[in-house]
Length: 115
Ligand SMILES: [Zn+2]
Image 1 (cartoon, rainbow, N blue to C red):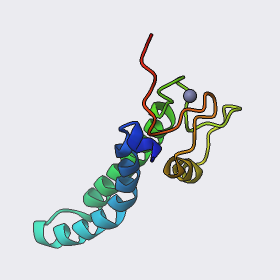
Image 2: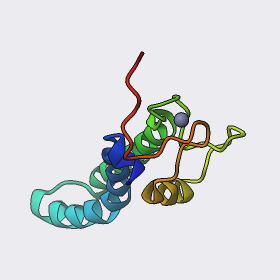
Image 3: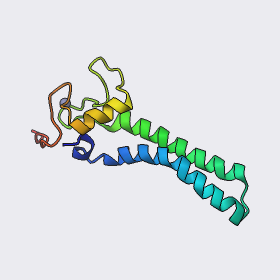
């Protein structure tokens, strides 16, 4: 099972997509708005770049701070030595449902109830 889905954090992935798609979609919207609404290019483009950057930064922060093992609290986006895993490899591992590096928890298995 997908790790992010198991943790109800699939929105982090969409935040990443939003940051990527904001640029071309915003660009097209700007090309439409500037001649029809009389807005300035620099104003529209700075909003587009701002939204894209905000999404990218928010995604980075959420990905590396919020994805934790429900069993032991281990940060699932880090190697055992504490170094961050590149986003590309993090998502590959999430898609494959890689078990927690520390306790072996696997996505899809219910977390043990608190005792
Ligand atoms: Zn764990």
